[in-house]
Length: 157
Image (cartoon, rainbow, N blue to C red; front, top):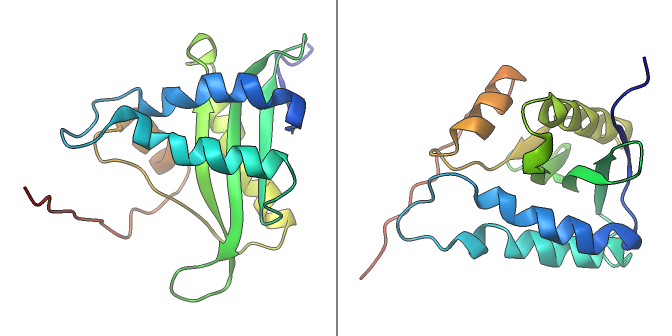
């Protein structure tokens, strides 16, 4: 049986479609003081410079169907681990188009990311996730991610 998708390196030709999928990063109950656009605009900027070749520490991959339609993406930055400074990677964004959800593509993209980071010498992969993003947290937890840090914020009026 032929796979329903493949994962490949993103190219500058993929950028516009990838930018239409990124807002899905805000598809959960966003905290009251947050603006949905703020959840993905920084990733959009990083994606632009990455695909332009101006962020050599970052890379992006896409999952595509048989017709090369983009179903999901990952954006990763290679960087030192926060505390040990060992070679590491940070998952900036992982997003699956609504039409491709529920088919294991998020899990496949995450596993692909881990493999790609290991091949680049990373000893770990970190990420940030909002506590209210239950779908993402479930994916990460079921793939062995440890929620070792809690980021707290207090808003000043």
